[in-house]
Image (tube, rainbow, N blue to C red; front, side):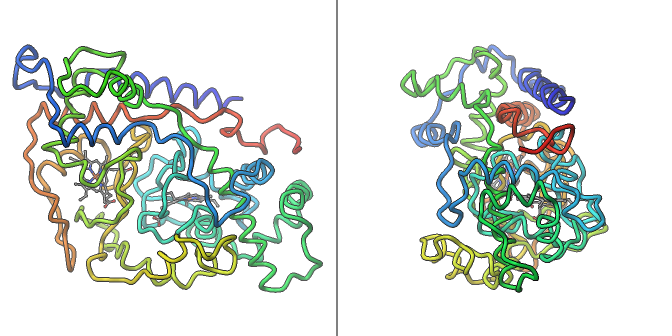
Length: 418
Ligand code: HEC
Ligand code: HEC
C-alpha cells in the first residue's frame, strides 16, 4: 500500500514538472516575437510518426509472453531477494518502483558496484535489443544476465532454479504455468530449460509495465485530429506549454535529435557512438562491439534451442550479426519516455540532469573520439539559452502515466500467494 502511495506521489511530481516553467529561461527574444511555430513538410511527417506507442508487438520467441499466470509468477520473481544466494538483492533493488524502475544512481550497485547505469523497465518491452549494448535480443533472455552476474545478484543457473523448486509458493506457480519440474537431480539441459522458462515469466511480467499517454502524446493526438496543421499558435494547451512546443520544434528540426530519436518510442533502435567521456574511475566501454560474440553464442538467443520460434525473421537477423569496428563504443539510442524520474542519463550516468545533457549535445564539450569512430550526425549546435530551456521542457513532457497499480506492488509484502 505504502509503495503504491509513493508511486502516486512520484507521478504527481512528474505531472507538475512538465507544466512548470524551466528554471533557467533567459529568453533572448520577447515572447510576442515568437508566438507560433511553423513546421516544414518533412517535419510534419516526423511529428506524425510520434505519439503513444499503443499495444506491444507479439514476441514469437516467448509463447508465455502474454500469459497471466506467467506474468504473476514473474512479479514474484522480480521482487524475490531469495534469487540471489546472499538473499540481499532482487531485480527491484536496482529497478525500484519509487524511482520508476531505476535506482537514481550513476552506476548500478548490486553485490558490488557495476559498470553501467540502470535503465528503466517501464516500456522496455517495446524494444528489440536490451541493455545499453544490445547484448540480449529478447526480454526473456535479458534476465539471465543479472541473475548470474557476480556484481548484480551473483547466482548460478542451478541456484536460481533450486530456489524456485524449494520454495513451495514459487514452485506451485511455476508448475501451473509451465508444467511439472522433472525429477531431481535435474540434468544440465533441464536446468537450462527451467531457466529459460523463468526468464519468460519475468518477461511476461515486464510486458505489463507499460505507461499510458504522456502530455505530449495527448497533444500530438489533438494535433493529428485537427488535420496536422503546419502553423501552430503557441498557446498553452493543457500542460504542453509554449516552451515545450518550441522544444518539439527544435527537436524535430535544427536540433537534429529526430535523426536518432524518432517515431513513437523516440529511438531508431540502433547503436551510435556519441563519445561522452567515460567516468574517471571506469574504463571506456566497448559497447555494441563487445556484445555481438556473447549474443551469438548464447543458448538463450532467439535462434537458439530455448526460443519458441527459432526460425523467425528476428532469429535470422541475430544469426547474421557481425562485429565491425564502427560499433566500438556505440550504445543503443535509448527511448526517451519517462525521463523525469530516471536521471542520471547515458550508459555510465555521465549526466546528472537534462540541463547537463543538453549542454553536451549543444557543445560536445569533453567528447572523446572513440578509438575508431564517432557519429558524424552529431555536430556542435550552439543552442541558445532559450532553445536549451525549450528542449528541456519538451523532454519533461514525455513521461507516460503509471502502469496499473497491481503490477507495481511487491507481492512478498503482507500477501498470501495465490
Ligand atoms: C545491480 C543492479 C541491477 C539488478 C539487481 C538488476 N538490474 Fe536490470 N539493469 C541494471 C543495469 C546496470 C542495466 C544495464 C546493463 C547493461 O547495459 O549492461 C540493466 C538492464 C536491464 C534491462 C534492459 C532495459 C533496456 O531498456 O534495455 C532489463 C529489462 C532489466 N535490467 C531487468 C532486470 C531484471 C528482470 C532483473 C532481475 C532478474 C534485473 N534487471 C536486476 C541493473 C540491475
Ligand atoms: C546520432 C544519434 C543521436 C542523436 C542525433 C541524438 N541522440 Fe540522444 N542519444 C543517442 C544515444 C546513442 C544515446 C545513449 C548514449 C550513451 O549512453 O552513451 C542517447 C541518449 C540520450 C538521452 C539520455 C536517455 C537516457 O535514458 O539516459 C537523452 C535525454 C537524449 N539522448 C536526448 C537527445 C536530444 C535532445 C537530442 C538532440 C539535441 C539527441 N538526443 C540527439 C543517440 C542520439
